[in-house]
Amino acid sequence: MRHKLPILVAMLALAGMTFAVAASGGGNGAVRIPSPLAPFDIPSSLCGFPVHADPGAQNLYIIHSTTLQDGTTITRTTGKFFVTLTNTDTGKAYTANITGPVTQTLYSDGRFVFDGQGHSLFGFTLTGQPGLIITSGHVVATFDVTGLTSFTLDGTYTDVCALLGP
Image (cartoon, rainbow, N blue to C red; front, side, top):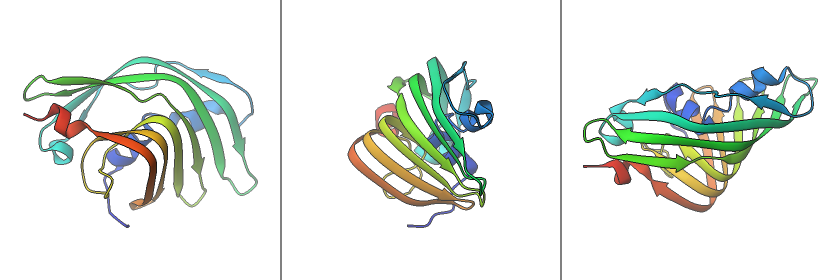
C-alpha cells in the first residue's frame, strides 16, 4: 500500500507525539511533556467537511528515549491525551481518548514507525484513503517521506467522519 498523503496525516497519526523526540534531548529516563498541542483545523479533504481539533487533557511522559549510532531515535511515550473533534459546519462534536501508549521509531532517512497500543488517531482509513479514524488495540503504521507505506491493526476502529457527519 503506497499513498502520497499530506503531512497532516502524519501529524494526526503521531497525535502530537513527534515533539517527544525533540523534547527528550536524546537521553534516557522519564521526561514530563506539558500541553504539546494547540487547537488546529483539519481540512475538509479528510471527511468531506472541516473538523476542528481541540486537545483537552494532556499529561504525556517520555518513559524511554534512545538515539542509536546511525541516528535512529526510538521513543516510548505514555500518559493521558484527549482531543475534542468538531464538525465546524454542524457543531457536532466527539471527544476522543487517544492515550496510547506509543513507541515511535524515527530513522535518519526520514522513515517513521508508529507502534501504538490503546487508542490512536489517524488521518486516513484502514485502506489508506482520506478519513479520520480512532483505533483501539495494537496498531503499526509505517511512513516514508512520501507518506503511509504500511498499516496493520489488531483491534477495532471508530470512523470519526461518520460520527461527525451531517
